Length: 163
Image (cartoon, rainbow, N blue to C red):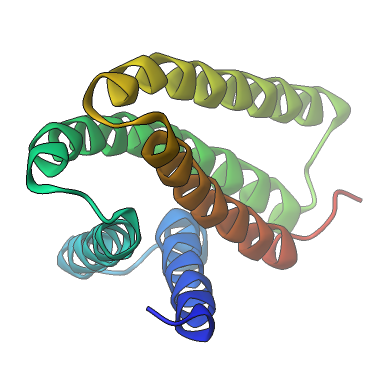
Protein backbone atom coordinates (compact mmCIF):
# COMPACT_ATOMS: atom_id res chain seq x y z
CA UNK A 1 0.00 0.00 0.00
CA UNK A 2 1.41 3.42 -0.90
CA UNK A 3 2.05 5.89 1.91
CA UNK A 4 -0.74 8.26 0.83
CA UNK A 5 -3.18 5.35 0.62
CA UNK A 6 -2.12 4.22 4.09
CA UNK A 7 -2.80 7.71 5.43
CA UNK A 8 -6.23 7.86 3.84
CA UNK A 9 -7.00 4.37 5.07
CA UNK A 10 -5.90 5.23 8.63
CA UNK A 11 -8.05 8.37 8.69
CA UNK A 12 -11.05 6.52 7.26
CA UNK A 13 -10.60 3.67 9.70
CA UNK A 14 -10.19 6.07 12.63
CA UNK A 15 -13.32 7.93 11.64
CA UNK A 16 -15.25 4.67 11.39
CA UNK A 17 -13.97 3.56 14.80
CA UNK A 18 -14.82 6.96 16.29
CA UNK A 19 -18.33 6.64 14.92
CA UNK A 20 -18.53 3.11 16.33
CA UNK A 21 -17.43 4.22 19.80
CA UNK A 22 -19.47 7.43 19.85
CA UNK A 23 -22.63 6.19 18.10
CA UNK A 24 -24.45 5.41 21.35
CA UNK A 25 -24.07 9.12 22.16
CA UNK A 26 -25.03 10.45 18.77
CA UNK A 27 -27.91 8.23 17.72
CA UNK A 28 -29.76 6.39 20.42
CA UNK A 29 -32.47 5.22 17.97
CA UNK A 30 -30.34 3.31 15.42
CA UNK A 31 -31.30 -0.32 15.01
CA UNK A 32 -28.91 -2.82 16.54
CA UNK A 33 -28.47 -4.52 13.15
CA UNK A 34 -26.96 -1.38 11.63
CA UNK A 35 -24.56 -1.04 14.55
CA UNK A 36 -23.52 -4.68 14.19
CA UNK A 37 -22.85 -4.14 10.48
CA UNK A 38 -20.75 -1.05 11.22
CA UNK A 39 -18.76 -2.81 13.94
CA UNK A 40 -18.11 -5.81 11.68
CA UNK A 41 -16.99 -3.50 8.87
CA UNK A 42 -14.60 -1.57 11.14
CA UNK A 43 -13.11 -4.82 12.44
CA UNK A 44 -12.65 -6.19 8.92
CA UNK A 45 -11.08 -2.95 7.69
CA UNK A 46 -8.71 -2.85 10.64
CA UNK A 47 -7.72 -6.48 10.11
CA UNK A 48 -7.13 -5.77 6.41
CA UNK A 49 -4.90 -2.81 7.31
CA UNK A 50 -2.91 -4.95 9.76
CA UNK A 51 -2.59 -7.81 7.27
CA UNK A 52 -1.44 -5.48 4.49
CA UNK A 53 1.30 -4.01 6.64
CA UNK A 54 2.58 -6.96 8.67
CA UNK A 55 4.15 -8.98 5.83
CA UNK A 56 3.67 -12.22 7.75
CA UNK A 57 5.04 -15.54 6.63
CA UNK A 58 2.63 -18.46 6.65
CA UNK A 59 3.98 -19.80 9.95
CA UNK A 60 3.95 -16.32 11.55
CA UNK A 61 0.36 -15.80 10.40
CA UNK A 62 -0.73 -19.08 12.03
CA UNK A 63 0.59 -17.87 15.38
CA UNK A 64 -0.23 -14.18 15.03
CA UNK A 65 -3.91 -14.14 14.05
CA UNK A 66 -5.22 -16.02 17.12
CA UNK A 67 -3.26 -13.62 19.37
CA UNK A 68 -4.57 -10.66 17.35
CA UNK A 69 -8.18 -11.87 17.68
CA UNK A 70 -7.83 -12.36 21.44
CA UNK A 71 -6.29 -8.90 21.79
CA UNK A 72 -9.07 -7.31 19.72
CA UNK A 73 -11.70 -9.06 21.85
CA UNK A 74 -10.18 -7.66 25.04
CA UNK A 75 -9.65 -4.28 23.38
CA UNK A 76 -13.34 -4.13 22.48
CA UNK A 77 -14.16 -4.26 26.20
CA UNK A 78 -11.98 -1.19 26.70
CA UNK A 79 -13.65 0.50 23.73
CA UNK A 80 -17.07 -0.19 25.27
CA UNK A 81 -15.88 1.48 28.49
CA UNK A 82 -14.75 4.50 26.47
CA UNK A 83 -18.14 4.58 24.75
CA UNK A 84 -19.94 4.50 28.10
CA UNK A 85 -17.68 7.25 29.43
CA UNK A 86 -18.43 9.44 26.41
CA UNK A 87 -22.12 8.63 26.69
CA UNK A 88 -22.16 9.66 30.35
CA UNK A 89 -20.32 12.90 29.64
CA UNK A 90 -22.55 13.68 26.64
CA UNK A 91 -25.70 13.24 28.71
CA UNK A 92 -24.44 15.65 31.35
CA UNK A 93 -23.12 18.06 28.72
CA UNK A 94 -26.46 18.18 26.87
CA UNK A 95 -28.42 18.61 30.10
CA UNK A 96 -25.83 21.03 31.54
CA UNK A 97 -25.68 18.90 34.71
CA UNK A 98 -21.97 18.10 35.00
CA UNK A 99 -21.14 18.63 38.66
CA UNK A 100 -17.70 18.50 40.25
CA UNK A 101 -18.60 15.10 41.69
CA UNK A 102 -19.61 13.73 38.28
CA UNK A 103 -16.50 15.26 36.68
CA UNK A 104 -14.32 13.52 39.27
CA UNK A 105 -16.01 10.19 38.52
CA UNK A 106 -15.42 10.71 34.79
CA UNK A 107 -11.75 11.51 35.38
CA UNK A 108 -11.35 8.48 37.66
CA UNK A 109 -12.91 6.24 35.01
CA UNK A 110 -10.71 7.75 32.30
CA UNK A 111 -7.59 7.00 34.36
CA UNK A 112 -8.85 3.47 35.07
CA UNK A 113 -9.45 2.91 31.34
CA UNK A 114 -5.94 4.13 30.48
CA UNK A 115 -4.45 1.79 33.10
CA UNK A 116 -6.49 -1.14 31.78
CA UNK A 117 -5.33 -0.33 28.26
CA UNK A 118 -1.67 -0.31 29.34
CA UNK A 119 -2.13 -3.54 31.28
CA UNK A 120 -3.78 -5.18 28.29
CA UNK A 121 -0.90 -4.21 26.02
CA UNK A 122 1.71 -5.46 28.50
CA UNK A 123 -0.21 -8.76 28.78
CA UNK A 124 -0.20 -9.31 25.03
CA UNK A 125 3.38 -8.29 24.20
CA UNK A 126 4.83 -11.55 25.60
CA UNK A 127 2.25 -13.50 23.59
CA UNK A 128 3.25 -11.63 20.44
CA UNK A 129 6.92 -12.23 21.19
CA UNK A 130 6.24 -15.99 21.18
CA UNK A 131 4.83 -15.94 17.63
CA UNK A 132 6.68 -13.08 15.89
CA UNK A 133 10.21 -11.77 15.63
CA UNK A 134 10.82 -8.56 17.63
CA UNK A 135 10.69 -6.23 14.60
CA UNK A 136 7.28 -7.53 13.62
CA UNK A 137 6.03 -7.19 17.20
CA UNK A 138 7.20 -3.57 17.09
CA UNK A 139 5.54 -3.08 13.69
CA UNK A 140 2.23 -4.48 14.93
CA UNK A 141 2.31 -2.28 18.02
CA UNK A 142 3.06 0.74 15.83
CA UNK A 143 0.10 -0.05 13.58
CA UNK A 144 -2.18 -0.57 16.57
CA UNK A 145 -0.95 2.62 18.24
CA UNK A 146 -1.41 4.67 15.05
CA UNK A 147 -4.98 3.45 14.73
CA UNK A 148 -5.66 4.22 18.39
CA UNK A 149 -4.01 7.67 18.10
CA UNK A 150 -6.14 8.50 15.06
CA UNK A 151 -9.23 7.36 16.97
CA UNK A 152 -8.34 9.49 19.98
CA UNK A 153 -7.73 12.47 17.69
CA UNK A 154 -11.15 12.02 16.05
CA UNK A 155 -12.85 11.69 19.42
CA UNK A 156 -11.03 14.70 20.86
CA UNK A 157 -11.98 16.81 17.88
CA UNK A 158 -15.67 16.01 18.36
CA UNK A 159 -16.07 16.04 22.13
CA UNK A 160 -16.67 19.47 23.62
CA UNK A 161 -14.44 20.69 26.46
CA UNK A 162 -15.92 20.64 29.97
CA UNK A 163 -17.45 23.99 30.94
